[in-house]
Length: 499
Image 1: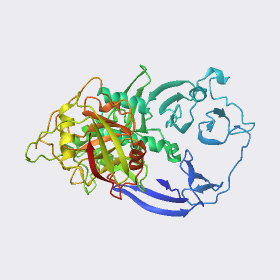
Image 2: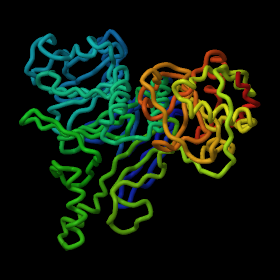
Image 3: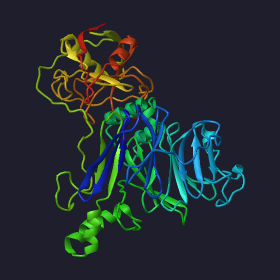
Image 4: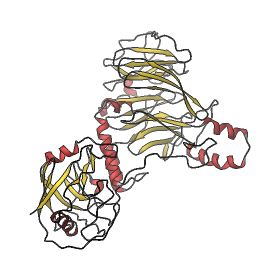
């Protein structure tokens, strides 16, 4: 395995029976390495970087960096992807895909079954105004898969015809609709979904988004690619034209070629059979240790997903997936307090250390939530309480006296029920809603959105909207936070005036 970094460093790693070991380190370039490719036989490695240098490495012997050929006239825009199959399929930064022969005169190869590009679907990227961020061939070189960050589409093409055979929509809009409808394969907590959505939107604004890629497994029957919900795998049955998705995927690495058609099922059967069999093939399969290698946004490390437990020295016997970071969710404790009853108000002014936020309250739609908020405000419950959770592009949250998202109680000392109304939706930014840990678990915590969040409808009680001080909201939103989304410098509510 080979890894590169933004500071131009190149590292070689060797996959062994129980993980990986470090082999070699090169200070290859003077800046960010923007592209890396390995030859089909695995003997040569090429890297390019922002220092405008291209270097070729002999993977076995670490040889020199002399290029074999330079072809300057294939594309009118800079080429950023290449892959080989008796021909070269390349894509440039304008979204144009070309087939050409690696031999002079570098024309359309005779190995394909089309004569004109108009007979293919290679104009798909031009039509959709997107650019492929990755182009990867299947092991048999009969198909290639692309991924585009512009429209979040994963496309599968036949090499011989240039025709697109599959297209999967993984756009954030579709993800939001599925979350709202409850049709996602893996259901996320609404707050966690919002956090991930904010991260994805931040990722789209960076050059790191162009490193997202889709790959085939060694059988060529599955495509594997990253989504907001996690790693997704798709099986394509070319015989009957159908496709299906499974929740867990693997990439098998072994010294012998094998056809893992049912990858997810292969793991389950293997675990059961290994307990009762001395078959040497089973033990050999176990020793291959299938692994997925991944990188992550804003993480200076790579991740390995394997069958083995992190601390296991023997063969894997338990669950296949191990999570070292569980999705966070709001937890609230309930304590006793003397009930109070206050006259409800229609407006409130949150005076914070960053400025004032004016809120219109909706007692006619959410009387319990407004009464709870007003009671706490007049009693000084929220005074000096910090904004403990700030997610850029999503929301700012406060109302917990403990300051960590685990505390707070309602004005009645116990959780109170949700209040949903068809006229109040999370269809605009600056909506003020109750935070909760599930249905009917409202306490003292609340949040203010900074974007539309329709997936929160009928899950979080809306009791107000900000009418002024939006600049203050965005100032808080843009505060620097730690890995738990807590601002490094405390931002406090000084007091709340209800009118």
